[in-house]
Length: 98
Image (cartoon, rainbow, N blue to C red; front, side, top):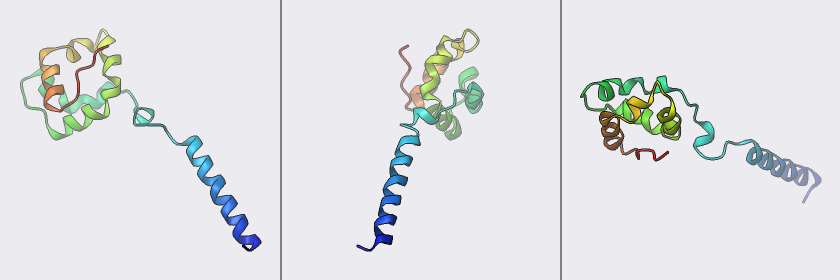
């Protein structure tokens, strides 16, 4: 190998190591818990509307946060409600066991 090729290979290896060290691990690392992200589900949780595709998408994104919401006195009535559980079931999001 030429010295330039060795240097390039070495730099590429270091770049991969750095990427592995700073990349988020799993989906939870990128999830920002923000209950307002579940706004598309309001009609289904508060009313009796069917959950929309946008609702289910957000519910799946916010799944790692559901226990946090269930412990919040301002949000727990929505997460623990019968309609909240119906929305999670319809969106194929497991009801949290916190």
